[in-house]
Length: 160
Picture 1: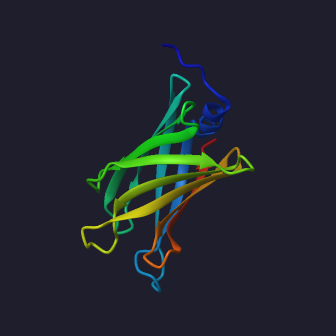
Picture 2: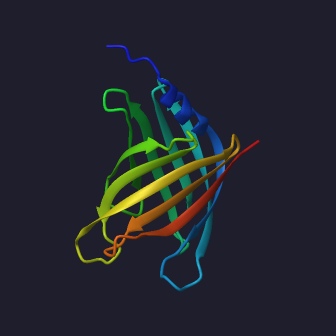
């Protein structure tokens, strides 16, 4: 069974390369954001998947490594993927779609609530290309009041 890359796979392959990252995390509402820096290397797997490995520091200064996989499932017509990081035990599973402009990929996931109450919460990672060499990843969670609250923004810039 040989799968042929679709236009959605080509969209994902904009990610392939070496990137630097500057992140801002809002740990507590009303408190100043914490900043950190890192790098990411993204490679292709068979033209159908991208695998990104990130290195950097958490907002509290601890070293962290993360791995993000992204692909496209033509049968479901949905972007799919996963995210794991060295500072957490949850395997994040992505399910997402591009917006009408074709520039913004919204990835839905479910994970442990920030409240630490043992409940699960809804999250979104939103990826937007500003140019071929600059992309933004924002992360947000759905509150009990039904509104989304952004807690992280990362600017990725392609290394030259």
